[in-house]
Length: 269
Image (cartoon, rainbow, N blue to C red):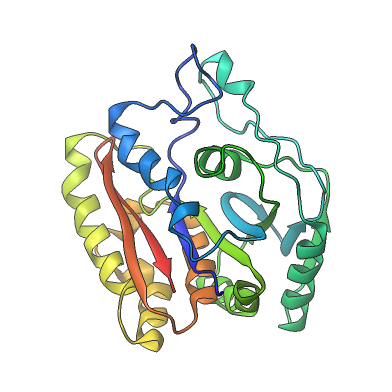
């Protein structure tokens, strides 16, 4: 059965694991609860349990698309200023070297320069949302980097090259944030972030797949685009998920307000 491709919000730092009395289990501030609930229901919402997950995080960029080929990556605690217990979190899912090799081959076959590495830990764009979605860490996961040039069309094309994995039992996940401007928060951020979210959602869910792709690639022409993303690394995982979605219908399957930001998640297929 074909898996969907997803663009999920991964929250802010270790936002779902801030309870020092029970650090290994999600217990978030009420503001983050709708996002936590969405992530917690992801696996149950799929047509069947995936055999592996391919995840693209907004926290890893390389000159060429780079595939993590390790069989049991460590965690990379790439957030700062949080309580000590949040630097002792565990998420011990295995890697999937066979899927990693398939990813590299598909990208190379589509004409992309690729690289492989096996020592980088999974960043918090991986282990924080996945620890909520998959607390038993019992589905293998492969991480793929963004490309440093952040070219939207290239990331859509990479997603298209990887779409066949959906028919092979692999869930493709773009992990970022639909709004990501750390310099603004609170009520003053809500009206422009909501206007941006409305425009982005209209583009992502355009029923014409050709027009949808063109509108999302041109994200920086949407209202408040650079207010929402002063730098677009947290939006680029959406491009990969959209490309992997192909002509399948797209829906917004999450919407919440956190620290004044309107935030959405999307599903293709």
